[in-house]
Length: 297
Image 1 (cartoon, one colour):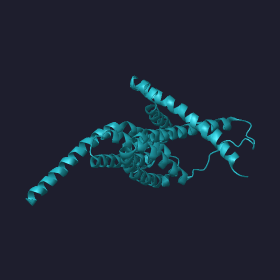
Image 2: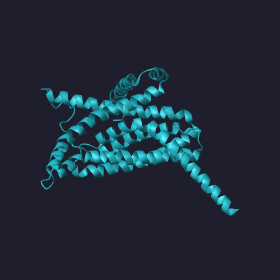
Image 3: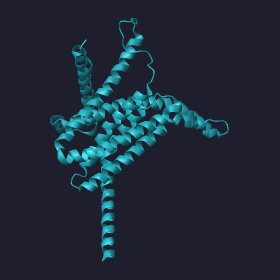
Image 4: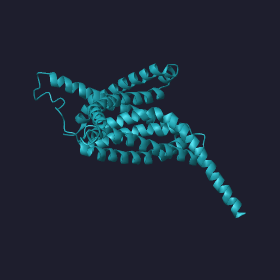
């Protein structure tokens, strides 16, 4: 009797794990679209640090990403059970922050370019400083904040595929997706930021002629790739953030459903830029002066 019960228990566990594997594959397909944006954004976020500090920075952000997902998975399950209506507003808040961050980057780059060409770089302008020193700790914090929003979107999308399942299966699927995404994204980010070192290694004299040519090509291409990822990462902020906003605004979401994939992405991009600009205006030119005005002298 005891043996029969044990076999039944093992069969139930095997059946549950099999269902979890199938559901995880479905959730992975649903979240794969965000993976490219996540990769571009995180590669761009950790670029610009000294070569010997690249992997420690990636590792620090990866650890932050793990903590993000440890917070997000149970929180998403709890909110979906108790306050399901709150999921969309929270996501939209995160999307608005991503749009703001993207708009701020573009604004600062344009302002820096304008300031560099301007002849009137007098002390009273106080615009963007030339070649600011990279603050590694701030860079890591910024990357972890961005990861939090992207991770939240991934968790919510994955949760949407398993809402009809028992709570345990929901948890196992979300935990599986979170683990795979973290290892996949930061493994690729680490490989991308160390491309130039790999090129230099292949370019050493004791390697074959083919290896030297390949190494030289990688060394030449690596800075261009990082620059391209910077641009793609910024665009991804608008696409992801704008996509979240579009999904949360019923009128825009209804429009997007009837569009092709290209025009749908265009709508997300435009919404992200406009949304980021409005939040930037609110934060920088309304709330900040108001806070300074209200601060007691």
